[in-house]
Image (cartoon, rainbow, N blue to C red; front, side, top):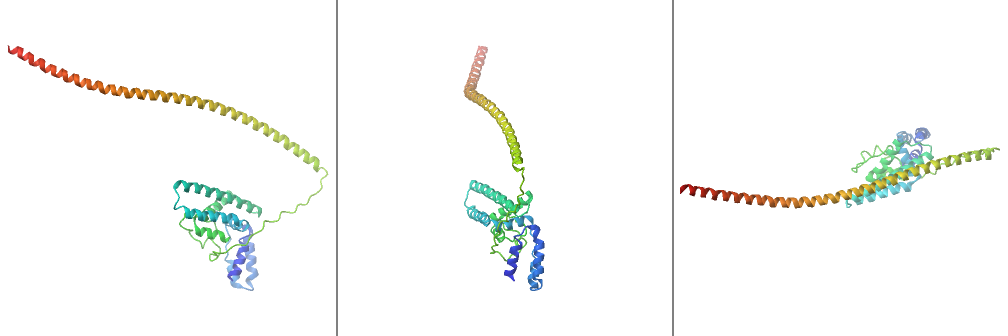
Length: 293
């Protein structure tokens, strides 16, 4: 039953989220008469959230992108214990760039299959890719293509893998690839005025492009003038700053000399006071001797 359930789950979780419930119910009905246990197991397969459905599609449509994310994540986990803070910050920036690029790819693939991806859903997709890079268990869950919900991790492990994967035991499961949808067949209806209409449309586009070009050139000239003005002002300010620094240096030197002179003058005052005190004492002694005569 496990292989049959995995095969059915593989198909169901590769569908756009809007088609999941109807397809699951049809599978339950198909197997109810021949294998009731399998039918009940299929009934227990939960509908994925929109972010999980986008990620399940990504794993099937572009597994190379997912493999790259997981390989980089494994390398980062192995290297982070020996890297410096600056190197870790650089690798974190690269990790964010990679998850953003793969998220954009996932949005595009979902759009090809008729599933619109909002910014909020895209944020959860990117958060799951980040969790898969940080945490090995999250990486395993993502790779199964059987996600039920978006993942998040702080590096201490996914909170509940059982609640995140439709069949938790399928840790080594590799989902089947999905081919891109066939482009719609367009029926061309001959239009005798098509050339004339096309010419009018192209002429209007040319006129609009010329107007846009003129506006862009005018805006460029304005910005270039502003840049020239600001550059001149910057040079002027730099010259003023250099002059002020020169004056500051002179004043600092003058202050150092003044402080030295002040110390000398204070020492001279102390010496002169001592001499005055000594002279005063000598004078008083002379006066007393005179009085004694």
